Image (cartoon, rainbow, N blue to C red; front, side, top):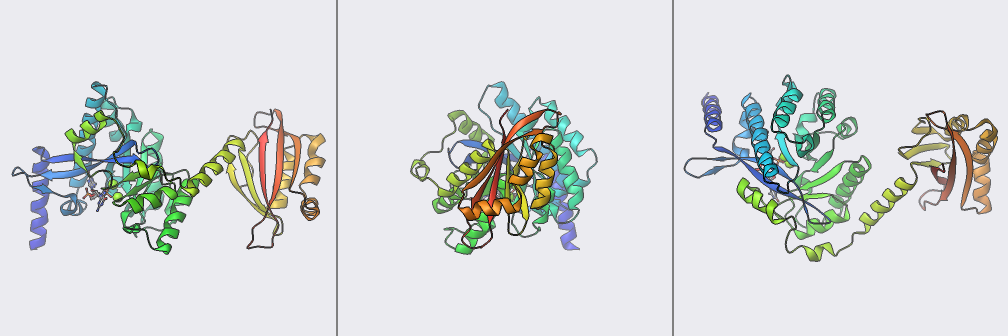
Length: 402
Ligand code: C2E
Ligand code: MG
Ligand code: MG
């Protein structure tokens, strides 16, 4: 009963505080991990009492979450952020995207997306300047509903970040069901010195799948140079943490934006070239050069598509039986080229080439595009060796020559 009363009291105090503008937006800068440039900021609420004491969100947000008061608070924060961005725009200042936290309670709010658009458009702000941050715990149940909701937010031009990833509440399945722009890796996954090998393996894998899913990665709670060094080897894109900057009042953040965007004293770390970021770049270069990349296991007659983007030909199965893939490919070729394609990439022909010691098999054939036009396509199957399996593996790289 006592607890209930104090919650009620807290709620009415927060409502009062909202009216009296005692709730302030603090901005925590986010930095590009490679260039050390200011890349964004997160808006975090601070309750500044009239006597100057500061109340942290951890002491009142959880209580607000069972009540509509959290909705009011989040909308208030968004408005304050828009006012700030509008001020920067008016003064022609350098500005960055600001992430605003939205409680999972908003999923049930009618007209959420309409209200979001109305507020941001009302301040004449480009929608991409606002990032909607939704905590991972929101995805635990109703993941289908959330996926739908996020889709609508993104369709209106806002960026969406999944906050606190790995904090323990969710399963991995939502990452595959939900398309977001940003994945924020929770600080609980990161120990002070990253000295534990298992921890590093888990983090590397998270970054790996996040990048393959084309999510921008942000590491939260980065406090040490060891953490930064490790995160850079994982090609983590953005760093948020006390190592660079703590959350700060608006005026201070405004100055920081004005001054430019480099962080001092980080040059030595920038000299370290991370081996895995080079691998990442190499992969990106391959995917840019070859819009269609397929990984196949000839021994097991299976394949999956590693990249398939901006390729002119009709859609093709993304995983399954290799011979069916070749049959599909053959059906998209010019009638005069079909035998050539089918025979070159038959498993028996590829295996004999492999046994002869050939490094690759390549042909140029004419393939029909979605627009009905035939274009020359070069398909090259490279044999690759994986020391841990006996199977014959190939990487197929395809690109249009016309
Ligand atoms: P969050 O959204 O995950 O925000 C990141 C928290 O990590 C912030 O705590 C930030 O100050 C803290 N942090 C950042 N770098 C470091 C670091 O290097 N070391 C450590 N130890 N901590 C770091 P903060 O400001 O206390 O906020 C706590 C949580 O309260 C937020 O976690 C968010 O879930 C919630 N919150 C804050 N503002 C709002 C808001 O306006 N609306 C809603 N719905 N929730 C909010
Ligand atoms: Mg957050
Ligand atoms: Mg977080």
